[in-house]
Image (tube, helix red, strand yellow):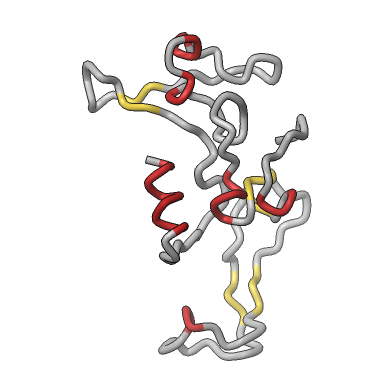
Length: 135
């Protein structure tokens, strides 16, 4: 599924990212029961713990940014999940006329109150593979 979204974006199609923590975990559907989602959550020393890793590393359930998947979300969106902010920024000032706001009552100087939730994404490493342990 992620490869389909990557190809969509590469073909100059627009993507709207309206929350943090998007494309963070790779999961897979159970081949025997497609209504079940399979996910193995690992540890920092062993990020996967998925038994399929030795037979089909492409389907390993882990963070997209970790090996063997190596498809960090910043390659697709330009930002990646960065954590929970210490300081809360609950108001978003409108600083320019943006096409997304056309037809609304927002204008330069307007404020969207309480728009930022408890998780944030941030530009990290310019969209290249993140090798830091914090990733």
